[in-house]
Image 1 (cartoon, rainbow, N blue to C red):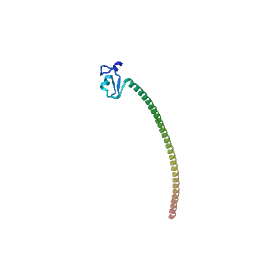
Image 2 (tube, helix red, strand yellow):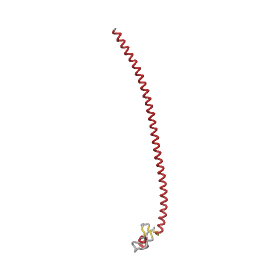
Image 3 (cartoon, helix red, strand yellow):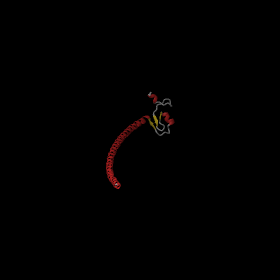
Image 4 (tube, rainbow, N blue to C red):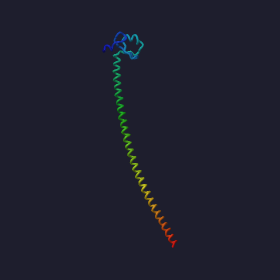
Length: 144
């Protein structure tokens, strides 16, 4: 099977030895002479494989670097989420405390106002009761 993969389909099963990077095509010696004379990026398959191996190693290193950066970014963003949640809970508590203070202040204002209103009502009732009593007395005096 391996021998079949290394043979040229175009030129009577000649052995493939070159790789044309211009056309991304494997070539035998006849292919190079007939179809790839003008190509500038011809290389031995063995050399191309070495470059791919080096490139693969570089790519692997870059992928590891990117993964490390992504992991750091993920950790930073997760910390940001926790910070937002913490700030939210803090502000929620501050709002509840402010609400309690406002309710207490409103309750105090209501009680003070109702007390003052009650005193005014009692004073008016006393004054009006005196007027009613005076009217009744004057009426009784006029009838006698």
